Image (cartoon, rainbow, N blue to C red; front, side):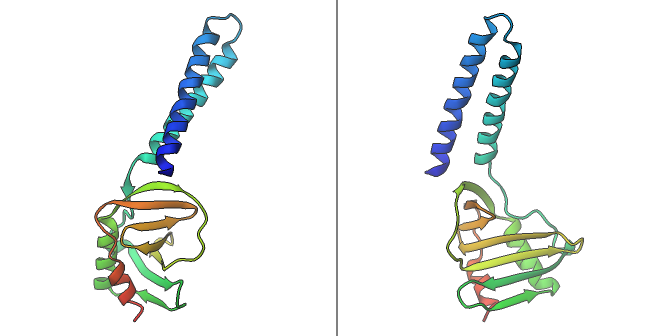
Length: 158
C-alpha cells in the first residue's frame, strides 16, 4: 500500500511541475524556472519508476562467492557456509528471487540476517523475515517472483 501511495504522490507532483513548466514557458524571461521545474518532474518520474521496478535479490555466480553467513536475530546463533555445494544452493535460490520495493521504515528486530561475501571483498546483506519478505538498509521488499528458501536458511543454524 505504501508503494501505491508514493507512486500516486510522485505522479501528481510530476504532473503539477509539468503544468507549471507549461505556464512558465508562455512568459518571457522564465527560462531558469522552466528548466528547474522540468528537471524536478523528470527526477520524480524516474524515482517512481525506480521504486516500482522489480529486481533480482542477488546477481552473482556461485563461483564468485567466498562465503554465506546466516545469523539468527532471535537466538544469536550464526553459521557460515564455505563449501561449494552449500554456496551453490543458497546463491542459486537468491538469484532466482525477484523483489519489489514496498516501502521505507525502521525494523524492530529480525529473523535472519544473510550476508553474501564475494571473493572480491564486496558484501550483500539482507534481513530475511519470511519466505516472501526481506529488508536491505531501510528499504522493505516483497517477493514478486520465486520464493526465498527460509526453511533451508533456518536449518543451517541447527
